Image (cartoon, rainbow, N blue to C red; front, side, top):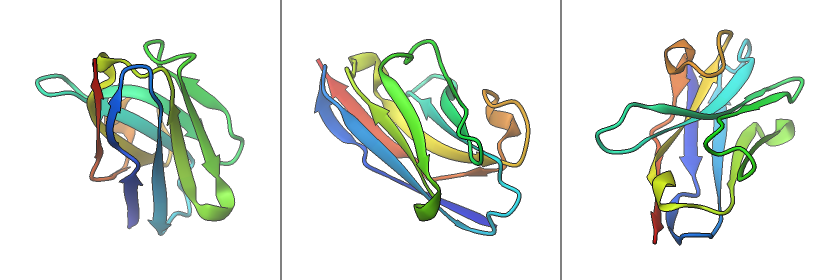
Length: 123
C-alpha cells in the first residue's frame, strides 16, 4: 500500500500564494507519476498538475498554467504544488494522487489518493 498525506491548505486572499505538500510513504516501488487534482463543491474532480517521479517531466492544466508549479523532492519522498496569484475560482479540496502508469490527466488512472486539503481563496 501507498500512503499519501497532503498538507499546506488554508484560507488566503486573492492574489496570494500557498504551497501544498504531499508526503509519500509505504510500498512506493513501481509508482512512476504523481498528480494533483482538485474538486469544488458540486463539480467533478479536475486535473491540476502531474510530475514524472524519476525524470521530473511535468504537465499542467491550462487553467493554472503560469500560476501553479509542481515539483518533487526525491530524497524526502514529497511532491509540492506551489500556487501563486490565487483566484477565488481556485477554491477547492486539493488531492494528491499516485500512479504506476497511465494518462497523467485522468483521475481514474491513478491508483492511490490522499485525503485532501482544503484551499479557500477569498475575493
